[in-house]
Length: 418
Image 1 (cartoon, helix red, strand yellow):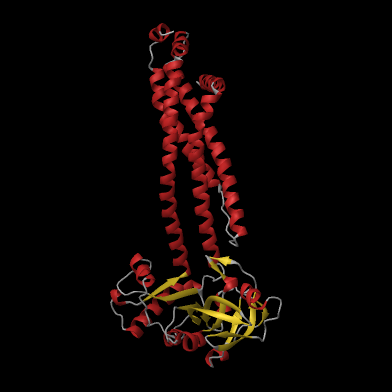
Image 2 (cartoon, helix red, strand yellow; image 1 turned 180 degrees about the horizontal axis):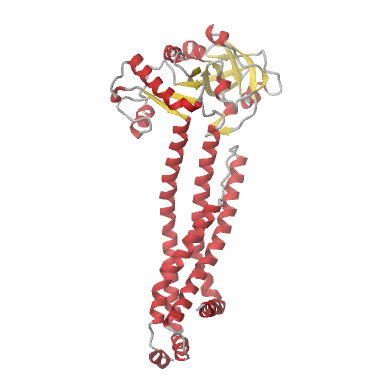
């Protein structure tokens, strides 16, 4: 039996070598399909790894509290749409954070809000995003580090001091080669003193951290934005093993503070880092399935091409089929030969597609690195196995019926056709 199988492989390989042009044309559809599978899976995996990698700088002992449109889920499109349309939830306050700090297992908190303003220095102007955060922000975002000067203190936050810490790009655009420490920039007609410059960090989750300005949260609230509410509260827990229990305690406390005893009244969302990571995995899992379903269309087109070519091959080689059957070849031998031809074509297409997909993934990674994104499109072993499985399955599915038809030809009728 094994000898017959090897003989089928020999006949299939010989046939493909004798029809190089046709084989090459048939490969195109499979190559495009497999290349698409590799590019899609590697890009999805790369973006997922990129986003999940950013969570490492926050640690597993963090609970995030953010405003939420009441009667919507925290991850629902209704909540996202509502906030994108300008629905402001103004109930999250620093006073909430002070109460939460008294909960067992809560170590500390960082209150934060976000603004956008124009910073001016000696004729140089730069519109940029402002992160108003508590003085202990560096305990939350451990990837943010001060390269020059210092970060502001809790005393400076409490006294509404007009001090800022700037990113590398802000320093370069406003000050050039001049030392910015101790210099004052104009914001809304007032002077803000630069006390620190951050280390270069680049673009993370589509935010260029080198173009950010940090200032005390209460200074941003009261002196620039004129508000008393927050965009988020980051709670640090002492023991991450009890983070779910602590999150439940925070939820009970927030219900009492905001008088939101029914789920559809809640104007806040509580998320642990584990929940955020699971959410990212679930989202990208769904996206990958949808994208792979779309790319399978190109494999379907390639499969139809293989079926047509194999039908033509059966017609052209009718005499050969009859001759082999007349000298003892079984129907299974004929079927296996044509089926192996189809599988060999798709496997060759798969190998070429994997190689081209890998090159495209490398190219995308290189271009993104030039744009400042530390994002790598990773071609994993799993994606290679998936692509190989797809190509083999395409050959089997679309090559089976022509192979079956060839195996059913009568030797006498096949020989008469010559």
